[in-house]
Image 1: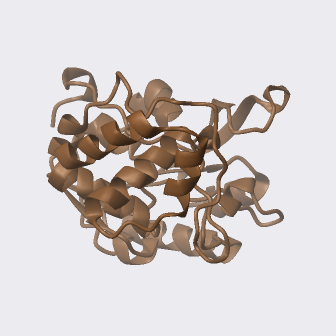
Image 2: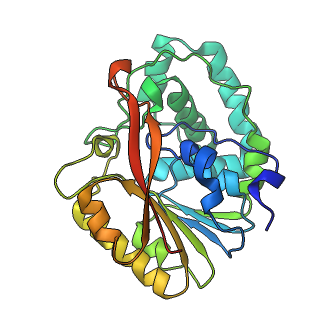
Length: 273
């Protein structure tokens, strides 16, 4: 497998709370270059997948709308971009809220809606109410299509991936010796609920954190390579310290209502090597 520096760059087409563009930019050298399948059970924007560009991958997330969007880009990116061009021409506050309240039926129009809302809502957040309805207000960005977009290349890379919406345990259980799992779960801790949880329809509990560690430990014992990121807290360190290598990594915090609350935060990088 060629190294990421030898490949044509492909940026994620979504902005995602907790996304790993910062990790790709600063810590990509931590990853092995020789592995079998790439498996990611918490897909988000897929930043690491697009950076590594693996020959074979399993990409999953419980967010079915997210997986449907990636599937539409994989199968029919031209049609999605065509719809986004129309959204760009019509974009306004009234149009945003009309699209936000809509429920398109086709795979292409659902994907176009998802990307449009992601790019024009407040800070690119994904958040739904108790009825599963997207409820993030209009943001300040007006660009629906970006100069950095390369949906054609994204589609080509996704041709090598199986896309599924499933619980992480069933996805991790598919891993075989030599595969690489990257797990980037919601950052809930034993003593507090991280704010990112409210952006998801289904809460991710501390019990889920423990279950995830146990799944990763079992995969490690079976010869699967593990890379995970998580909150830098005593409870997470204690959970992983005995079975994995745990490092601290810093990143900038940009998801905050005011710039005064933004700064540098530490996260944990957890690996089996």
